[in-house]
Image (cartoon, rainbow, N blue to C red; front, side, top):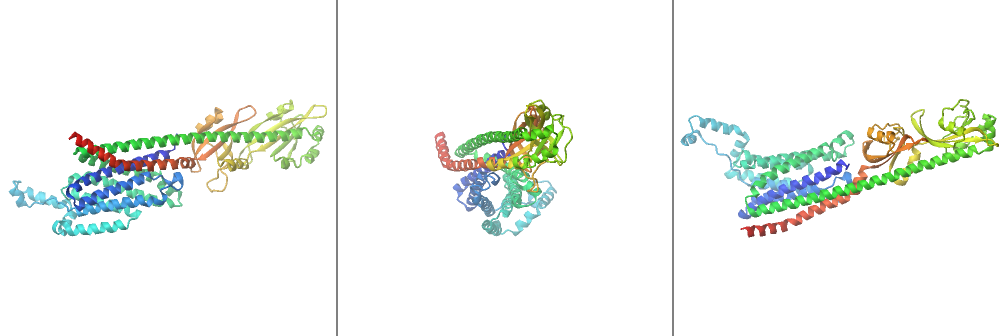
Length: 569
């Protein structure tokens, strides 16, 4: 299963490009009007939409830093913000320069002369007045065709344009929204209502996008909401998508009025769709390939850890054989001489780097526990390894047991102790308890996270707890799909997991006892962010190339559409 962050990154690119296409199509509509009339108001409108489209394209090409830590566009992220801001500001200037055509308000006498029934004129006029007090106020303030107001708004639009900050983005988008609302509701241009609604969604997008300013917070609860791919991030992109669709549907019905324009937009849209499908398909294949390679590497490392465990078992087995082959130990065991055994093996655990040493008589009575010399005399006849050693079978394996503070996993080797005549007089069992130091070596050599489980309880790990210092041991694995696969069916599991608030690509493999039954698990994991970073550079480059090719295709598409239109005429 591919990471959700990767899927959302592709969605981010697609939505951004869709919004850019809608703005570009609207730019073309206003450009067509400007070519015929050559007036400033239409000039500012098509330039505003063009700059806004370019800003949205650059925004679409940006890969969230969670992928790469620092992207190619990190130092130039302000460019896309600046272009969007300039686009909003220039568009607002164009709308402000365009004189409002107010809805006419008729007097009762005029309505009567027009044949309206007596009394209805007063009602209609009153209704018109109540429709918007603000519109009446604006009309009273206007001097011929509202020129004074237009100059003021134009100047303020330019001032805002030169003082762009991220915080000002919603204000700039909101100013365009207000100007479109005014034209659609207080003027005669009711056909602009869909554009007004598109900028309602664009303004909401810019407002929600301000959540990015809160990503420097130290509060994990706040960060979880405002983080990339978090709730606010998803909401912002949803709002942008709705605005793009509304604007695109509105502009399409006008662009289809002329054959050449229709051909141009159809071909441009086809290019965009081809680039989107190609880009998304390539990045999906790339991510799938990287993920498969990552899982293959993890499985290999899991085998390395399993080999390391086998190597430690071999050392434990060798230590047991050394004790069993010591004639002085055999003589002390035959004589049940506890004091002599303490003397002989006083430094065994230190020199052999083992955790435990238990020596028994031929009746499984404990004669020595090197880790606790005062505890002896009890029977361990129920121990399967000791029982096998008493019949002459050296045996080793893993065992899960309850420790003083938590569960533990121990590698144990048992061997028979024979006297000079070859008779079995006792047994020796050497044990090595796995701890976090054991997996630290693997972490240093591979850079991967590793854990060892006794049953389903983590007993050794390189992972740290929430305090950032102590080891995250004693944690029980609650994912039943993992425990069923590994501990019940004795098979390896791989997939995505979450631990300590971080996602990992993980492999779980069974650890088996002397009877080949699973008694624990070993875990090898790689932070998912490293996988994303491995593919992120290629994804970002793919996005940038797609944007560049789309921009370069505009002029050839224009020439082709022009040629086709001339031939059809």
